[in-house]
Length: 196
Image 1 (cartoon, rainbow, N blue to C red):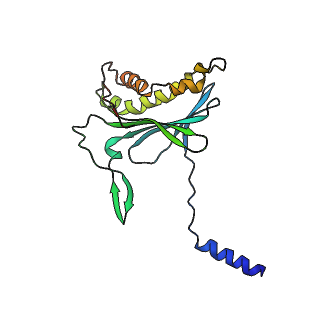
Image 2 (cartoon, rainbow, N blue to C red):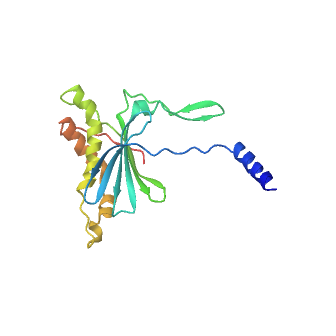
Image 3 (tube, one colour):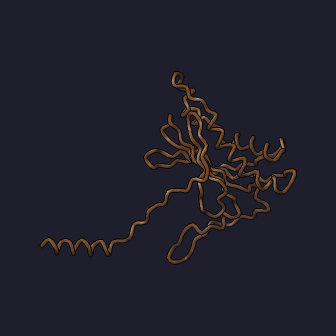
């Protein structure tokens, strides 16, 4: 009976659906600080401009920062229902005040993901040159992610621990400061719309 059981197991495996392996994201660049590391990740999604993962030796979670270009993001097929592709609704971008979607997520060590904030923001503005205004959004988000390397951990004072400082981080304020620097326009207004 041993060979019969093996044949039955082989037949069951043959007809089971194949499991898709999730590919590990490609790390494009790494920065290391005393308390954390910032990883720039490749993300092949429509509209995806920048993705950063922040990991700490002190924290109980990681952070994920993403930036997407809204016109490309809203043309994305998000699924299929009865053979009909479903797309995100398109917006009239001439009248919509935002150009990008900026999001920050808290990633638990158990695989959970919780959004800290998701905002539609205007990161294009007016720079001194067209090339500057095109690079400004990705450079601004990089500056926000790399700001985490400057946080100093204090084990003696709970309110100054790395994790508590990350929990109090003003992500949108950091982005606003960085984009003003990148565009060399101290009056730039993010016109942020909070989605979460």
